[in-house]
Amino acid sequence: MAAVFDKPTLLQRIIPIFQGFDGLLALAILIMAGAGLMTMYSVGFDHGTRFVSHGRNMMLAAFVLFFVAQVPPQRLMALAVPLYALGVALLLAVFLFGIQKKGAQRWLNVGVVIQPSELMKVAMPLMLAWWFQRREGMLKPLDFAVAVVLLAVPAALILKQPDLGTTLLVMASGLAVIFFAGLSWKLIVPPVLVGLVGVGVLIAMEPQWCAPDVDWKVLHEYQRQRICTLLDPSKDPLGKGFHIIQGMIAIGSGGVWGKGFMQGTQTHLEFIPERTTDFIYAAFSEEFGLVGTLTLMLGFIFLIVRGLTIALEAPTLFSRLLAGAMTLNIFVYAFVNMGMVSGILPVVGVPLPFISYGGTAMVTLGVVLGILMSIAKSKRLMQS
Image 1 (cartoon, rainbow, N blue to C red):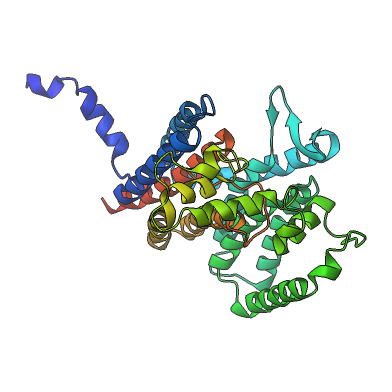
Image 2 (cartoon, rainbow, N blue to C red):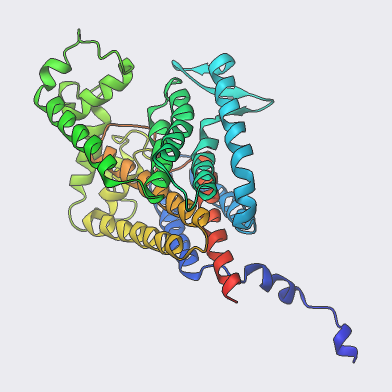
């Protein structure tokens, strides 16, 4: 009888906390985190404390992931409307009296300086998943129109700051929810075709569109310059085109096997700008070559496939939509970063998940992965 009243050991108390965690997702996260730490050690070893800070940011993100994973999807759904309303209110506050730096008004001082657009990367898919959960079984075209309005309001406020990169990420996360909710292909294909035709016309008429005296009206000057630089970076090789040209040189010089760990000449002779942040993929490709790049891509594919599997197996519409959007968030981050460094997309401030240095981006990634783990955990606990 005495054994009945024995206190459980520390290990016995800790194990239930981890029950239900998705092992494959955890494995994918550990692999990518390891790749990020290795890369930062190489490219940032002469950047003072970048490696140590990157590790600290990862530890903070891991804590956030663990905390968010304990929140069941039902409570996440209850937070959707308040978080969305708070995010829009903060964006309006930025528009009215935000802090301006380098021609952009993106920050707000609330005792500490914050960037409210980061909140919308999570609040937007939460809100739309909540909306479609409410309309489950009786979806009409008007419901999709309401979803577009819910997406357009914060996207317009972020674009106004201006912050094209964050706007694209918020729109991508929202459009992913709308797509997974069952938007008809008849409404998807026409705008995609129009966009492809527009890109073709832009490329064909690049000399006329990119003349210095042409005003695009709908875009800010720096956005126009980024697009024109993408189309022909050689027009300003020491200015606007420098980032793209040096990124492509580094990627090409890596060859098949790469120059070796900590042996990248373009990287360590500081030809690659922002080599620990936005352009770290170029440094990685130079040192690890095509083989390393393909291995990194396989790591992202493994993570994304696992995330989509969690979405497919989720027990509720809200969980399915949210898990799908969170997974595509990671895909968009990786695709846009690799695309801009490789010269196939305009240069925007989008970090490479796990690899790029940055505290805010790492914490946001922790929230995204924590939501995925929460959804996977809720399914496993329901089955048990």
